[in-house]
Length: 393
Image (tube, rainbow, N blue to C red; front, side, top):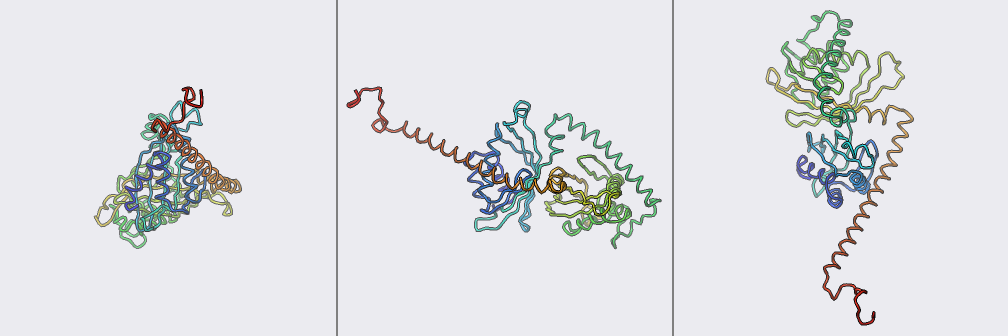
């Protein structure tokens, strides 16, 4: 692949929505032989197993799968691409989906690439399903998602922001004590500072200030990084404006010890895609209790800062992937068993899909042979035993 955006979307369409032969040909073309494929249901190693898994998934969906790309961002230097898409499934072995329409899954897919003489090839793939969002905003009837988006989430945002401000007042006291002019050595006016001058460099620093700093540092960092009317969208609430954003973050940090690790940052103009791991442990629990792990896919839309030097966040979407993180990390011995089963399922699904592919090839080959015989000259056709010929009267 030469162009990570256009070539990758074409490859995904062929792999998910193409024929069994197109699927095989495309996987052989774009995946390395020792590629790895991470999914909640399996952990596959090797291109052959990946081919089998995709064949098996396509076989279990009829009518065939359809997809809609939400966003694609590639980073050639880091050999990474991030794809957000909707997958319209029709899992026929599950009768309810057959009659009422299949689930629509919102997927966050991470691709790692390797440079080869033929161009960039995929050597690593992660598929993350956003189960809660998929159900509430894409699978259930549209009025449900509209009600949540327009009424329930803003209401929850007001509640979260109000509680956060109340806790802040209890911890700090008079809000005027915060000095917005001096934050970590940076000059930030009351209208906001320069924001992000270098996204890859400044964003991790900002995250540390927000989640690991004092309430004063948190408030000042949000004042600097977000536009005055910025929106933060979360699967559980929506808040608008710096004060409300601070209240939401303050509540979460006041209730929990938070550690955040940023795995990747992929800028694409004024769009920035971020993948992060968050560890949260309620403050009332002792230190020996393991923190709760949550994966987050964050979508940032940027605008110009007030002084025109940098960028500020105008929309912040946080898409938590808590179900996967819970099953993989948070269930102790059960998570270990789940990971063991996932490795086994990678082999089983891979083998089953390859068997299906060979069956289709055999069936199609037989049909071609039959057609060739049918189109053969009469003298090469098998004798019709119902017609008397010398030797069979």
